[in-house]
Figure 1 (spheres, rainbow, N blue to C red):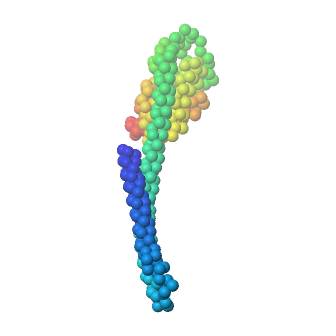
Figure 2 (cartoon, helix red, strand yellow; figure 1 turned 60 degrees about the vertical axis):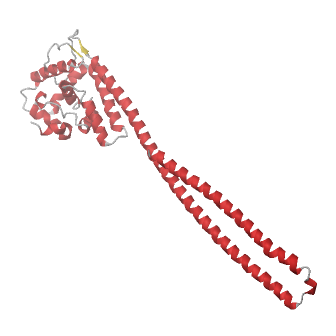
Amino acid sequence: MYLQRRPQKLKKLMKKKRKFKKIFSCWALWLLLGLLAIFTLWFFTPIINNFLEDFHHMGKDTMGEVGDAFGSLNALFSALAFLGIIFTIFLQSKELRLQRKELTETRKVLIGQKREFSEQNKTLKLQRFENTFFQMLSLHNEIVEGLVINNKDNRLYTVKGVKDYPNAIERASKRDVFISLMKFMKKIYDLNYKDSKYEYSENILPIYEFIYKNFNGLLGHYYRNLYRIFVFLDEAELSDKEKEKYGKIIRAQFSDSELLMLFYNGLSDSGRNFEKYIERFALFDNLPRDSLLSKESHSRFYVKKAWGSNYYLT
């Protein structure tokens, strides 16, 4: 609407300016013709009719009268020329005012166009971001849909720090894979560290490394793609408020078991880079603390920013 109103006003000014120029040209022409007519009337007629025929009879007195006549004529022309100059200055001043108005309106139109182009560019950037963002989320969900634990091979790789572990893991597919993995991880924890007086993150790392090493085919692709989504969001040209909004959209994709696995993945060497995004987007805002392997001690593994409003809940 802004750019529609401004050109209309500018067109009116330009039309008014053209009309003024036309009037100015007419007045200038009429002024010139009037000066020529006066010049003809006052100059040629007295010379031809009165003075040239009797010029040889003129005396000094008569010559003085001629000079006086020319003197009055000069005064008349001077007055007319002065009026013409004043009128010309007036017309030029009016034209300059119209030009200034036209320039002002043109500048406003250009500013409005720049502002609108900026908004359009911002909208296009947001559309491109959202297209890529939701495509990445769609790929993430496809990866989840393809997760399967079939338990055909019970042979597991051993990891230093994990002495006892079950021989088998429950079969699962899709998001239930994370439920099965957490149950398996809980059994290993109970066998090795449940009665330990010191439950530092170093005690948890061997267990998670055991899980990650034996199920890397499932978890590796999942976490790499998830990590790229957060990198893409963090580097996007968006405000902090907008990033927080899209971060909540990602967070809403996780089940409780996925959040639990992400919790322990962030403590491991393979998931250490994920920790900053866990804190940046408060990914544990919806994580039930009772589901942690140890509620009291493990809750302290992350700063309160990672928990969001969940930090103040018991």
